[in-house]
Image (tube, rainbow, N blue to C red; front, side):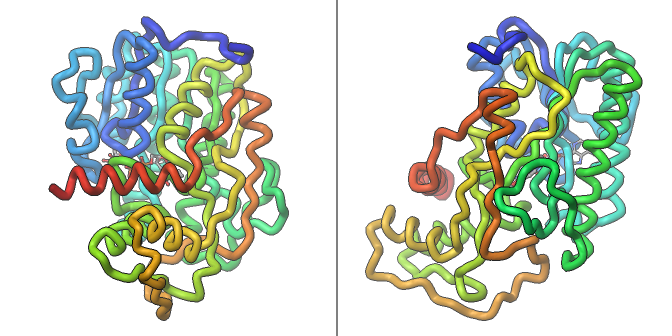
Length: 333
Ligand SMILES: NC(=O)c1ccc[n+]([C@@H]2O[C@H](COP(=O)([O-])OP(=O)(O)OC[C@H]3O[C@@H](n4cnc5c(N)ncnc54)[C@H](O)[C@@H]3O)[C@@H](O)[C@H]2O)c1
């Protein structure tokens, strides 16, 4: 591959937050590409073993119960690995519930993770940042240099975006001071198999699918014009693997489809997939206590990800929602 430098095959990796939605799919991707070992490091404060149930007996994917706030545990876990995927983190919903712990995990947890990389001579870190670092963006397309517009954000969203900016700055600092390679990936709204209820925007998709599967009309808070950029979790996992193996590093890259999808469109897609176009979305007042940075235009650019790590999404929203519904059917039985 043009932009591939290092290989995954026969290499060892550590995933912090290994029981996460994204982390579990990164593990699948790395194992499929022949990784020697993929260590799953998690304290299960948010995630459960259900996301990694299929890996629990795999000797190439050892589970390490550990806390990113305990540096000694991280130093031990990162011994001898070639790369670290830093996925442990508090999304906006858990951040709203416990902001002090959330800020600690997203910032001090990153300091500790980077320290563990430095001490163990790890080659590269891939950090899970977020498009929340733009707040409410105004420019279209939203390129990586766009500033953080946080004025209208609720505190949990502001803290979440700011804590991810801090993680990005820490990566740059460790690269400058110690030569640690990094790629920072700003994921948009990740959704898919093993979906959890911690991500504000993906929760909406999962709830709509649940309703429609139950033969009920999907419920939309507001007028349905709110848009998000829904990116499928296997595409995100592939982006993480590419960010680990690319020639190019030291980047901050949007991992987004570049396509804005309205809440109404999500509902219509789910209705069509389930053959229930007879049902119509029900609009009501938006009662969410935690609100996302949202508007009716986003337009995240994915050009830098294409140019630097050769990543493009493969799963469109119709196929993604189909796969999510299939997974929901399987787990609800
Ligand atoms: N899901 C999204 O839409 C999305 C979007 C942008 C960025 N991100 C970021 O990507 C990463 C992965 O997202 P996800 O949805 O897979 O997350 P997730 O909520 O599924 O998983 C986070 C994991 O981190 C673990 N964790 C929390 N505190 C820890 C600690 N102190 N020590 C060890 N583990 C700890 C949790 O138990 C959980 O398994 C997160 O950092 C998130 O902020 C996610």
